Image (cartoon, rainbow, N blue to C red; front, side, top):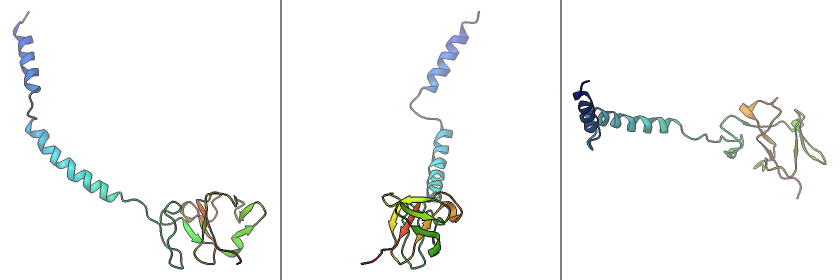
Amino acid sequence: MNRKAPSMHFRKRAGAMTCRPPVQRRTTAWLVLPASLLAGSLCAPASAHQAPAGWQYDPSCCAGVDCYQAPPSDVKETKYGYQLSTGELIPYSDHRIKRSRDEYFHECKPGGDTSSQHSFCLYVPDRGM
């Protein structure tokens, strides 16, 4: 049996546990930091876009392409809520209803798809008064 093998193994292992990291690790650490900063800057949060009248849609409803001004025939007021042309009913008490800053309805649907059965938000103009 070779008695030098265990002691050689111990010396190699003890050498690996020194406080000073190998030069190769220090070099790669400087490359990781700039790469992560660059990746973070490319992943900016989604921002809302503007309605035709110039006001901003709420970022919680819109990822830049989801909201659009709806034709007047697309939204009907019923006693239960707003009935959209796709059949979706949004109750008056629903948190997705927002105040429109012009005289038009605005719908926010995934990708601005007018045929989608789910709305993120519905902007409703002030009525009366």
